[in-house]
Image (cartoon, rainbow, N blue to C red; front, side, top):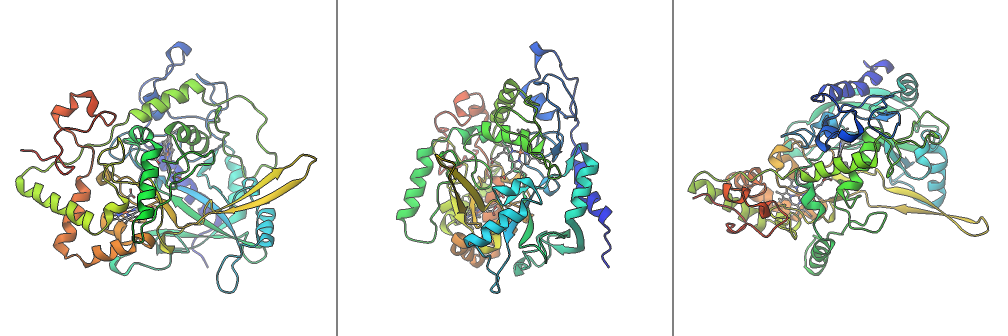
Length: 490
Ligand code: HEC
Ligand code: HEC
């Protein structure tokens, strides 16, 4: 018998929340006066409460579904706005059609129609897409608890990567990543026609996102066509958002601006409905969305929050202290280029210096696959009431190359936080990056170490000189002192 009772499952899910709610209490008193609205920084730190009506458009505050009670509860490593540890990972619930005898998912029309019809009974969001957020908590705690108990039970506690589907351990790692309870979904097993997976998204750092926001789409499209023309396995695709823009944010590049991501984060992570994004739905409620038109956070507050997030500067590069160190870092960079890391982790993209990304989606192989948000059901209505249903299927192996500036401060790594170190992150690369990783494996231990040291040092270049020069904050011309893209302190 499992050592975990149902009650413990609920505790497990809510335990994370208890942690998230303890970190970083808001500092100082909150200004309630309309004329003195809180600053963007105060809003980022603000601890939101349910049924709170203050300085907002008179909504119901936090929730009903939420993952944490402030932005900073998740974004805090290396300072306010940083990345988050695995405890802050966002969990995603995904339904997939049953597998056939060859363990392929059946993606034919009948299977897909059945999938959406049946899984919508589990969660209203499954009417149109195959994934939704599995929130850590709800202001309707009793009802949410009952829903969770109805859907899940713990199977066992195992040393795993946290994913039932990721059974293969990378041999070189030689140790297992974490002790994670494996969930078993009661629904979706034998009697239903779908299976369910839980996947995770690692909280990225927000340092420097303002610079990323200003990268021109043409600079990204130019990298896409350069890779297309070049021989070899690396062929990235520019992410296109639902509204036809180039996506630069999120592990799959789903959003094109910090503003869009912020209004989504308010709604999805904290349950703060706003003019640009509805809050998450309660899975246990049959009624569509609460009829309330009021918002939990106003347009002007979101604007301030966006300004604050955009102002978070990238972390400075770790500059070499001695000539010897400087030589080792340069060699590390040479290996990084030579073994093909720089094909995707491009040093400079338009105005963004030393960012080490191409912002393209790459097929990273089956090991990193995650089927969340891979199937969408689109209903097109025509004049006269005729409707046509179309299914859109996306490649679950594609991820956007993450920037590597400041990465020393943002462990754990990869979209689900499965890698604790740079070495672990590198060896789980597959697909288009396989050749490059093979070359990394063949480096001598001393040469590998230089690559890893080089990764540790990455950040925006900054010296006293440049700090006093406002044009050196990423939006201006390139810093004068750079030699081979790196600054060397004399
Ligand atoms: C529960 C943890 C959590 C909370 C709370 C949270 N975030 Fe995030 N944030 C994430 C995760 C996880 C991602 C990556 C999501 C993805 O790619 O699907 C992310 C991504 C982002 C991004 C995009 C960064 C990039 O480079 O791709 C922005 C901007 C952002 N969050 C802002 C905010 C703001 C503003 C708040 C508060 C309103 C907030 N977040 C609250 C976990 C959190
Ligand atoms: C084909 C493109 C490609 C190549 C080549 C490549 N990477 Fe990556 N890299 C990615 C993508 C995409 C991710 C994110 C994948 C994920 O999260 O599942 C990533 C993630 C990383 C991360 C983790 C960053 C984070 O914030 O989580 C590190 C570190 C990294 N790569 C270093 C390297 C090094 C070193 C090399 C050379 C040995 C390399 N990469 C080669 C595309 C590439």
